[in-house]
Image (cartoon, rainbow, N blue to C red; front, side, top):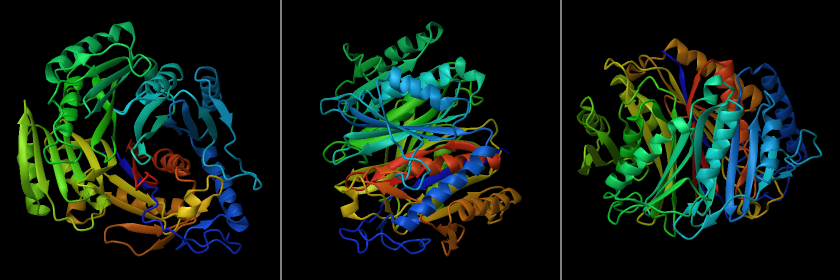
Length: 559
C-alpha cells in the first residue's frame, strides 16, 4: 500500500490576550522551548531563528524532488502580495521572478535573509502585487482567474505538477482573500494536461476559469448546458477581467445560509464534481472553501480539476463535513450502500442522531447532530478516514474553513472520498500532523514591523495503518513516528510532552508572525513536506488553510 500523508498545520493564534506581560520585553536569555506568553523577538532568539534557517540548507542539499509554495493575498482592489517558499530547484525562482515582474507588473520586496542583522525571513521571495481586482459586495474578484494563470505558467510552461490549491478569507467581513498553491518538481505530463477551476458562491454566482487548448474547449460548452439546466443559470458577459465565464444562478437554487441545516451548498458542490469527472479524463485536484459577508452568511467553494485520466475514472464523490459545534453533513449519490454504512457508523460508534435529510436529483444530503464536547478534529478526521479505508474508499481532497452558525464562530472540515477499484478494504498508512502555532499579543498584532514568538505552540501527530482499527501499530507507522521525532527535535528544536492517547505531542517555538497576517507558516510547511515526501518516501495528499478568529488572524492549515 502506498504510504499517504495528511498534514495539519494549526498556525493559529487561539485565544490571544488583550495584554501580555513581556510582549514588548525581548528575551535576552536562552530561548525557551515553549513560551507561555507571546514575546517580541530579542537578540538571543533572533540568532536561534537564523541558525535554524541555516540548518535547513542541509535538507535542501539532499532534497531531490522538492515542493514550491506560492501564496497570493488580495488585500483590496489593486493591492496584493505574493510570497514564495521552498527549495530553488530547476531555476524556478528565476522563472517566477521574470513572470511576476514582467507579466504581472509586480514590485520585488525584501523578504529578509540569513544574516542576523536582517529581518527574519518568512519566505524566500516576496512581491507587491497590484493586479488583484475586486468589485461590489457579492464576492466578485479575480483571485480564481489569476490562480489559473499562475497554474498555466507553472504547469504548462515550467512543467511543475500542481499538488494543492487552498486558501481562506481574512478580515472582519472575509474581504481579504488568500490562496496557497503547492507544486511538485517538474513532470512532462504537465505540458499536456489542462486545468480548470469552477468557483461556486452561495450568493448565486458561478465562475469558470480555465487554461484550455482548442481540443479541450468543448467541456466549456458542456458545462454551459449543465449550469443552464441544473442551476437555471444565465451567462453574463463583461466579466473577462475576473473569469472566463460568469453565471448568475436562478432564484431559489441556493437554499439556506452557510452552515444551516437546510443549506444545499455542499450538495450542489458535490453534484458539480460528479458532473465534471463524468467527462472523460477529468478529476478533482483540489477544493478550497471559504465564507464571507457581514455575518459569514455566504459560502464559496473553488474546485480545481485536471484532465489527467485518474485511475478512479468517473467514480462519484461523497462529501463529509465535520462541524465543531456538533453537526455532521453527508452529501453524495447512493454508491455501494455507503449512506447506510456510514449512517450505522456515525450512530453506533459516535452516538450521532439524525437531524434530517433531503434529496435533489440522485444526490442525497443527510444531517446529524453529535454530542462532541470539545472536538479533537485530528482524531475525528483520522477516524473517518479509517472508516472509509475499511469500506474500500479513498480520501481525495479536504478543506476546512471558519463559519458562523447563529452568530457563533466555529470550524468546519470538508472531506471528499471516492470508491476504490475493490470493495475489500484495508487501512493504508496515513499520517496526520497538526502544528499549533500558539497565541499572539494584541498590541503586537497591530505592529507590522515587530516579529513575535507565539505562545503555547504544539505539534501533534496521529497515524493510522494496517491493524490500527484494532489498536495495533504497523511497522510503517512505527518507523515514520521515529523519523518524525528526528525532524521535530533536530530541526525545530521541539521537545516531547504529554498528550492524548494515540497521539504524539511536542512543544516548540518555531512559529512567528508580524502583524495580523504575515507569518512563517509556508516556510515550515514546505520543509516538512520535503522531509516527509523526499526523505521518507510518503505521498502528499492535500493541505487546507483555515483562518479563524475575528479577523482571520488565528491560522489553521491542514495537509
